Length: 393
Image (cartoon, rainbow, N blue to C red; front, top):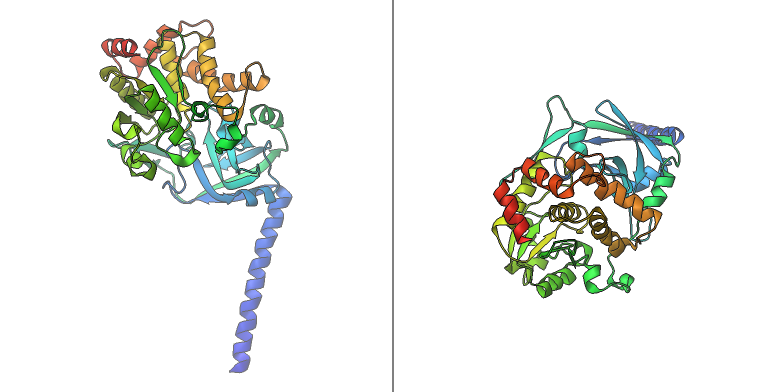
């Protein structure tokens, strides 16, 4: 009996050693071939965000151990589609509409978190045919897999060009913290990315980061700023009502006593879901007079696009639109006008986004008021609603 037991223990140990050895061999092969594989098991919020970003369970540590670094170009295979895209810390490192492998960065500047796939101002899950997003009446959402899509879905990453994106990476390289002490050169309003929109003919619009979300450490500064400015009507582009009101920081704020519409929009400005939600928000502005605030989470992308659209509607010049948009990049990242980085960010974000929205090749030769009005009609506003909106602003 003892011999039999000893033999069983020996065989079990041998099997374990073989399995570990095979696992290590796979990792060695992965390192040798600069390849890593992962799976997406469903389209729940574990794997898919409301923006259509696709999250994996591959850690930044696993990714770098295979040899990947920021600035590399990798071949990504998903649903029999092969795409060659850069590895970057956040989607803002690529042009509007472009795809990226996201490997996050911690406060010390080191790779962190899990690897994800995203499109700057776009929706990876929809664009690559994995699923369809449904938004409920209360602005909550869920994803449904497209017909023929079965799980698990394997995704592979293979090195295509070591450092092939480094030049673009360096232009877009942005660093920030959420520590107020690190921004001694800014006013409290600037730290909150709060400001009045002062472009031509605009009299009644403010923009900021989220005054009721403590994630960025700027909410209390933003809430004080909107109180001092007398804001009364608010477009919350980032949250649904339930999510915002459940936060501990929502209670006892000036914000909580104002007239707010909660839109919970994604960042794919071309999607019907975004256009429908934006139309709801702009009708709200048209039919509710007051002092207006537009915000998302950072007050950068969604708030930046909506503010720029309204600036065009009111007759701002392209230079004014770009200048207002880029104030955000000074407030967060210290990007200054006249630098190559300033021009690259402006051209790859707000200029590209407006050109796509207006369906024009050049904003410089376009009638921005006319294009903005046509865009608003296309998303569902009528002439009277546009008139009211312009009058209120």
